Image (cartoon, rainbow, N blue to C red; front, top):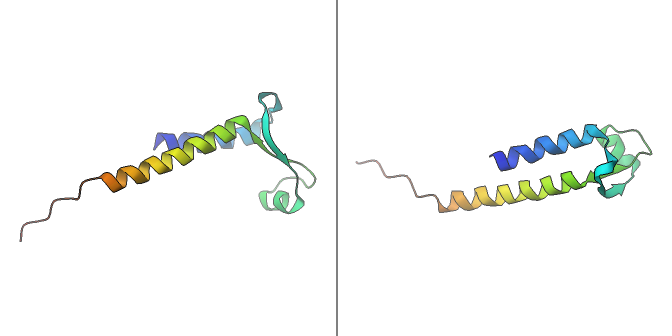
Length: 80
C-alpha cells in the first residue's frame, strides 16, 4: 500500500511546488483541461520528472497488488 499511497502524495505536492528546476517531462496547454482542473486559462499543464516516476511506481504497485491477490491461497472451507 505504501508503494501506491506515496506516489499519490508526492504528485500532489509537486503540483503546489512550482519548482521547474527539477525538470519537466511534459508541458502542454489546453484551455478545456485547465478549466477542468481549475487552473488559469492559458497556463501549461506540467508533468515533472518526480510525477512521472510516481506514476510508474503507482502502476507497478497496482500490478503487484493484483498479482499477489491472484496468488493468495483460498480460505479454508468451513466444516458442514
